[in-house]
Image 1 (cartoon, rainbow, N blue to C red):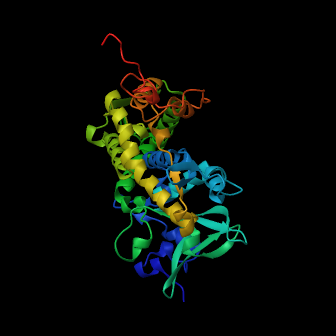
Image 2: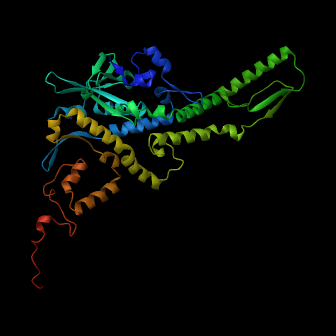
Image 3: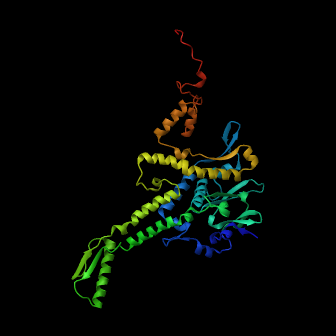
Amino acid sequence: MLESVYEKRGDPLENPANSMSDVELLDYIQSNSGIHVSEKEAMKHAAVYSCIYVLSSSLAQLPLNVMRKQGNKIEVATDHAAYDLLSHSPNSWQTSYDWREGEQSHVSGWGNAFTKIRRNKKGELAELYPSFPWATSLLKNGNRYVYSTYDEDFGYEAVQPEDMIHIRALGVAGIDWRMGKSPIRQHAETIGLGLAAQRYGSKFFESGGRATGLVTPKGALNKEAWGLLKSAWKAAKNTFRDTGGEILLPSELNYQAMTIPPEEAQFIDSRKMTRSEVAGIFNVPAHMINDLDKATFSNISEQAIQFVRHTMMPWVVKWEQELNRKLFTAAERRAGYYVKFNLAGLLRGTAKDRAEFYNKAITDGWMDRNEVRALEDLNPRDGLSELLISVNAVPASQIGNQQENPSE
């Protein structure tokens, strides 16, 4: 009998025995703020959406190639079936960018990203087809595990682990270590507070904000007069909301202006705080989700480097290792095949920064001028493929061949 890994934990969302209606009813965590927090609901929070978009788009835009190392020579392995799938079109519906953006958004929000590896009759790679994390479970059949997936095109499928690319977020101890844990579920309280502040702000302004004034009659009112007063005030408020301007009221009324107490206006500060905390959850620099309160031109440049090193690099390593072990056989890995993301795209600086970098690379002798031209999408030129050295920036082959000065 197939046993769900999540069935032992008692998580109804991942139990394939539940119907879709059961999942819809239980697909959230009740936070102390009173907000139902689910991955789909959390995506309505601007900071959560921004963080997931930054991570997904950053990984998707990186050049991804299949490489082969033979001896001291490394070249792009365009002859391998994985090359076209990873670099251009993993399936008939998506580009490489679309596929990676979608899968990174799944692992960032839901904690797991799944892609089925489809092969032809010869066992060769034919297609990489994504599977939704909310429709995929890890089941145990005796001593062997299998992924159970569902989509409208193929229905229910049982996928062997070697045919499933599985990118995981940080998981938890115990039986769950085979699956990633949703960051949104782990931080439901923080995100719930943000959603609560967002909802409060919407209702606050939808109702015209807190009462800004107190209208009192100068004399006693009977029931009929009180009804007329309420109708007149409601009509006046609607007119003001639509067109602005002054509100005209019947005579014999007193008006006393009221202000919003500062402690009741702190939801704005709460939203700023939550935005910063959400950025911390996803390890995204605050300025990258338009939180510029503490940003300066000097530290933004350094934070961009830190983003590549400490935010994107771990994800890149996860992707590379999982793709390498699932797309290539042991024999292919021994033959030198591997997958490589190029992070240079995220570190690409201004024209001045690149010029200084290239100058040092050329004069220090570890990059030739045609290699620089290739990085700038320029065609090679004759005579520029020889390495220079930093002494006098001359070709290395000329060192030791200069004629001695006869006068010495």
